[in-house]
Length: 235
Image 1 (cartoon, one colour):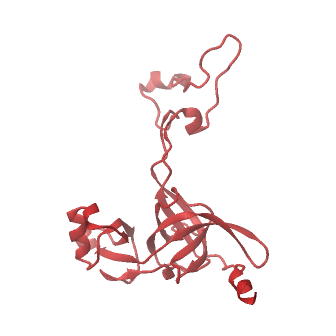
Image 2 (cartoon, one colour; image 1 turned 180 degrees about the vertical axis):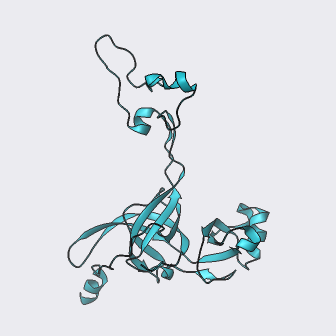
Image 3 (cartoon, rainbow, N blue to C red; image 1 turned 180 degrees about the horizontal axis):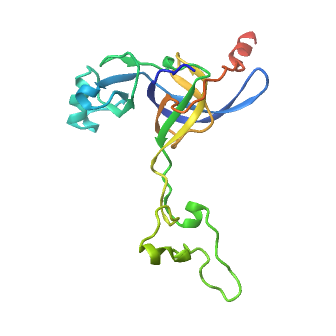
Protein backbone atom coordinates (compact mmCIF):
# COMPACT_ATOMS: atom_id res chain seq x y z
CA UNK A 1 0.00 0.00 0.00
CA UNK A 2 1.32 3.41 -0.95
CA UNK A 3 2.07 5.79 1.90
CA UNK A 4 0.12 9.04 1.43
CA UNK A 5 1.79 12.40 1.83
CA UNK A 6 1.33 13.98 5.24
CA UNK A 7 -0.46 17.31 4.79
CA UNK A 8 -2.75 19.51 6.79
CA UNK A 9 -4.40 22.90 7.19
CA UNK A 10 -6.39 24.95 9.68
CA UNK A 11 -10.08 25.72 9.47
CA UNK A 12 -13.13 26.76 11.45
CA UNK A 13 -15.99 24.43 12.35
CA UNK A 14 -19.27 26.00 11.25
CA UNK A 15 -21.68 23.27 12.33
CA UNK A 16 -23.35 20.09 11.14
CA UNK A 17 -25.85 19.34 8.40
CA UNK A 18 -26.76 16.47 6.12
CA UNK A 19 -26.36 15.77 2.42
CA UNK A 20 -27.79 13.15 0.10
CA UNK A 21 -26.12 11.05 -2.57
CA UNK A 22 -27.77 10.39 -5.91
CA UNK A 23 -28.57 6.90 -4.60
CA UNK A 24 -30.66 8.40 -1.81
CA UNK A 25 -28.20 7.77 1.03
CA UNK A 26 -28.20 10.37 3.82
CA UNK A 27 -24.75 11.39 5.09
CA UNK A 28 -24.32 13.51 8.25
CA UNK A 29 -21.47 15.96 7.70
CA UNK A 30 -19.61 18.75 9.46
CA UNK A 31 -18.99 21.95 7.53
CA UNK A 32 -15.43 23.25 7.97
CA UNK A 33 -14.56 26.68 6.56
CA UNK A 34 -10.99 26.66 5.25
CA UNK A 35 -9.77 30.01 3.99
CA UNK A 36 -6.20 30.01 2.62
CA UNK A 37 -3.55 29.33 5.27
CA UNK A 38 -0.20 31.12 5.20
CA UNK A 39 3.06 29.25 5.75
CA UNK A 40 4.75 31.18 8.57
CA UNK A 41 7.73 28.91 9.23
CA UNK A 42 9.38 25.67 8.12
CA UNK A 43 11.09 23.65 10.83
CA UNK A 44 13.76 21.06 10.08
CA UNK A 45 15.72 18.47 12.03
CA UNK A 46 18.91 20.51 11.61
CA UNK A 47 17.52 23.73 13.07
CA UNK A 48 14.70 22.62 15.40
CA UNK A 49 15.14 18.90 15.94
CA UNK A 50 12.02 17.87 14.00
CA UNK A 51 10.23 18.51 10.71
CA UNK A 52 7.10 20.65 10.66
CA UNK A 53 5.27 23.33 8.69
CA UNK A 54 3.80 26.18 10.74
CA UNK A 55 0.52 27.58 9.39
CA UNK A 56 -1.37 30.77 10.19
CA UNK A 57 -5.14 31.04 9.86
CA UNK A 58 -7.52 34.02 10.00
CA UNK A 59 -6.33 37.61 10.19
CA UNK A 60 -6.45 39.59 13.43
CA UNK A 61 -6.01 43.30 14.11
CA UNK A 62 -2.57 44.31 15.36
CA UNK A 63 -4.05 46.00 18.44
CA UNK A 64 -5.59 42.67 19.47
CA UNK A 65 -2.41 40.60 19.36
CA UNK A 66 1.15 40.66 20.68
CA UNK A 67 4.25 42.29 19.22
CA UNK A 68 5.84 38.86 19.02
CA UNK A 69 3.02 37.60 16.78
CA UNK A 70 3.23 40.72 14.60
CA UNK A 71 6.98 40.37 14.13
CA UNK A 72 6.77 36.63 13.49
CA UNK A 73 4.15 37.06 10.77
CA UNK A 74 6.06 39.93 9.15
CA UNK A 75 8.88 37.49 8.36
CA UNK A 76 6.39 35.77 6.04
CA UNK A 77 5.18 39.14 4.64
CA UNK A 78 1.69 38.66 6.00
CA UNK A 79 -0.63 40.19 8.59
CA UNK A 80 -0.93 38.77 12.15
CA UNK A 81 -2.90 35.54 12.44
CA UNK A 82 -5.40 34.51 15.08
CA UNK A 83 -4.49 30.80 15.01
CA UNK A 84 -0.98 29.43 14.53
CA UNK A 85 -0.45 25.66 14.52
CA UNK A 86 2.16 23.19 13.28
CA UNK A 87 1.70 20.18 11.03
CA UNK A 88 4.38 17.72 12.11
CA UNK A 89 6.25 15.48 9.65
CA UNK A 90 4.63 17.46 6.84
CA UNK A 91 5.61 16.54 3.28
CA UNK A 92 4.03 19.54 1.54
CA UNK A 93 6.36 21.29 -0.90
CA UNK A 94 5.85 24.85 0.34
CA UNK A 95 7.97 27.82 1.32
CA UNK A 96 7.53 30.59 3.88
CA UNK A 97 4.85 33.00 2.67
CA UNK A 98 3.06 30.48 0.44
CA UNK A 99 -0.71 29.96 0.62
CA UNK A 100 -2.18 26.54 1.37
CA UNK A 101 -5.70 26.14 0.02
CA UNK A 102 -8.45 23.61 0.63
CA UNK A 103 -7.71 21.92 -2.70
CA UNK A 104 -4.85 19.95 -1.13
CA UNK A 105 -7.59 17.52 -0.03
CA UNK A 106 -10.04 15.70 -2.27
CA UNK A 107 -13.33 13.88 -1.80
CA UNK A 108 -12.85 10.36 -0.54
CA UNK A 109 -9.64 11.03 1.42
CA UNK A 110 -9.37 9.84 5.03
CA UNK A 111 -8.35 12.52 7.52
CA UNK A 112 -7.87 13.17 11.23
CA UNK A 113 -9.48 16.29 12.73
CA UNK A 114 -7.89 17.85 15.83
CA UNK A 115 -9.70 20.38 17.99
CA UNK A 116 -10.46 21.49 21.53
CA UNK A 117 -13.48 19.70 22.96
CA UNK A 118 -16.35 21.60 24.52
CA UNK A 119 -15.61 22.58 28.11
CA UNK A 120 -18.21 21.27 30.55
CA UNK A 121 -16.69 22.49 33.80
CA UNK A 122 -16.32 20.51 37.02
CA UNK A 123 -18.50 17.40 37.01
CA UNK A 124 -19.08 14.51 39.39
CA UNK A 125 -18.08 10.95 38.64
CA UNK A 126 -21.62 9.96 37.58
CA UNK A 127 -21.75 12.57 34.82
CA UNK A 128 -18.07 12.43 33.94
CA UNK A 129 -17.48 8.65 34.04
CA UNK A 130 -21.00 7.18 33.76
CA UNK A 131 -20.64 5.62 37.23
CA UNK A 132 -23.50 3.92 39.06
CA UNK A 133 -25.51 5.61 41.77
CA UNK A 134 -25.67 4.28 45.29
CA UNK A 135 -28.77 2.78 46.97
CA UNK A 136 -31.63 5.21 47.66
CA UNK A 137 -33.63 2.98 50.04
CA UNK A 138 -33.26 0.67 53.07
CA UNK A 139 -32.00 3.12 55.62
CA UNK A 140 -30.47 5.60 53.24
CA UNK A 141 -26.69 5.41 53.14
CA UNK A 142 -26.58 9.00 51.82
CA UNK A 143 -24.04 7.68 49.31
CA UNK A 144 -26.24 8.19 46.26
CA UNK A 145 -23.85 10.22 44.11
CA UNK A 146 -20.59 9.76 46.02
CA UNK A 147 -17.42 8.61 44.33
CA UNK A 148 -17.38 5.30 46.21
CA UNK A 149 -14.54 3.45 47.88
CA UNK A 150 -10.99 4.19 46.76
CA UNK A 151 -9.49 1.28 48.72
CA UNK A 152 -11.13 -1.67 46.96
CA UNK A 153 -9.36 -5.01 47.56
CA UNK A 154 -6.84 -3.27 49.80
CA UNK A 155 -4.88 -1.78 46.92
CA UNK A 156 -4.13 1.45 48.76
CA UNK A 157 -3.03 -0.39 51.90
CA UNK A 158 -0.47 -2.36 49.90
CA UNK A 159 0.81 0.42 47.66
CA UNK A 160 -0.03 3.49 49.70
CA UNK A 161 -1.47 5.36 46.74
CA UNK A 162 -4.52 5.67 44.53
CA UNK A 163 -4.06 3.81 41.26
CA UNK A 164 -3.70 5.85 38.10
CA UNK A 165 -6.91 5.94 36.08
CA UNK A 166 -9.28 5.71 39.08
CA UNK A 167 -12.52 7.44 38.13
CA UNK A 168 -13.12 10.62 40.09
CA UNK A 169 -14.87 13.95 39.84
CA UNK A 170 -13.02 16.69 38.01
CA UNK A 171 -12.74 18.87 34.93
CA UNK A 172 -14.56 17.54 31.89
CA UNK A 173 -13.89 18.75 28.36
CA UNK A 174 -11.79 21.67 27.24
CA UNK A 175 -8.85 19.52 26.15
CA UNK A 176 -7.25 18.73 22.79
CA UNK A 177 -8.77 15.67 21.19
CA UNK A 178 -8.62 13.97 17.79
CA UNK A 179 -11.34 12.29 15.75
CA UNK A 180 -9.58 9.76 13.57
CA UNK A 181 -10.25 8.26 10.15
CA UNK A 182 -13.03 10.59 8.96
CA UNK A 183 -13.94 10.73 5.28
CA UNK A 184 -13.95 13.91 3.20
CA UNK A 185 -17.27 14.04 1.36
CA UNK A 186 -16.86 17.26 -0.61
CA UNK A 187 -14.27 19.98 -1.20
CA UNK A 188 -15.47 23.35 -2.51
CA UNK A 189 -12.52 25.43 -3.68
CA UNK A 190 -14.67 28.38 -4.80
CA UNK A 191 -16.33 28.92 -1.42
CA UNK A 192 -13.41 27.62 0.69
CA UNK A 193 -15.14 24.91 2.67
CA UNK A 194 -15.13 21.14 3.00
CA UNK A 195 -17.67 18.59 4.18
CA UNK A 196 -16.38 15.87 6.51
CA UNK A 197 -18.48 12.83 7.38
CA UNK A 198 -19.47 12.64 11.04
CA UNK A 199 -18.68 15.00 13.90
CA UNK A 200 -15.45 16.81 14.72
CA UNK A 201 -14.22 18.12 18.09
CA UNK A 202 -15.15 21.51 19.48
CA UNK A 203 -18.01 24.00 19.45
CA UNK A 204 -19.32 25.95 16.51
CA UNK A 205 -16.80 28.48 15.17
CA UNK A 206 -14.00 26.60 16.93
CA UNK A 207 -10.61 26.24 15.25
CA UNK A 208 -9.72 22.75 14.01
CA UNK A 209 -6.82 21.16 12.15
CA UNK A 210 -7.51 18.77 9.29
CA UNK A 211 -4.57 16.50 8.47
CA UNK A 212 -3.85 13.25 6.69
CA UNK A 213 -4.99 10.26 8.76
CA UNK A 214 -2.11 8.49 10.49
CA UNK A 215 -3.81 5.12 10.98
CA UNK A 216 -5.91 4.97 7.83
CA UNK A 217 -6.39 1.72 5.91
CA UNK A 218 -6.92 3.62 2.67
CA UNK A 219 -9.13 6.23 1.06
CA UNK A 220 -12.77 5.71 0.09
CA UNK A 221 -14.48 6.05 -3.26
CA UNK A 222 -15.88 9.59 -3.74
CA UNK A 223 -19.68 9.80 -3.68
CA UNK A 224 -21.86 11.86 -6.02
CA UNK A 225 -24.07 14.29 -4.12
CA UNK A 226 -27.43 15.64 -5.22
CA UNK A 227 -26.96 18.99 -6.98
CA UNK A 228 -29.89 21.23 -6.07
CA UNK A 229 -28.57 24.18 -8.06
CA UNK A 230 -29.28 22.34 -11.29
CA UNK A 231 -33.00 22.15 -10.43
CA UNK A 232 -33.16 25.89 -9.75
CA UNK A 233 -31.66 26.67 -13.17
CA UNK A 234 -34.31 24.51 -14.89
CA UNK A 235 -37.13 26.37 -13.15
